[in-house]
Image 1 (cartoon, helix red, strand yellow):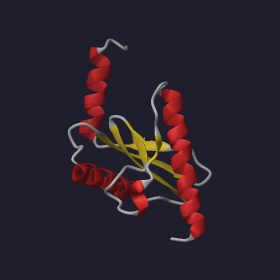
Image 2: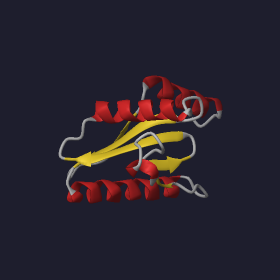
Image 3: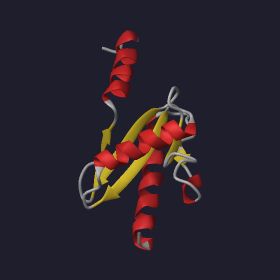
Length: 117
């Protein structure tokens, strides 16, 4: 991976952290800085309840990103407390989120039970 790609990825992680802080006032979402030592130490973005893997590029591999988030979450011991998500942005395109269907259904169930219709 080139230095430019690493800078681009780090900038995307900071951008995602900012978006999450804006969406969850009072949350201290920040870029996970332990990744340089081991991919399993921290998520790309440290935010409560989610194990976030960020990918940005010409055509990032969404399935690989989600697999990486799930495996790292498992290795960290946070499988019961964190939802695995991949936040992906193709160059010059809108970003999107991918997550396991079970995690998504759990979030939908919680939202529905709160009466957020």
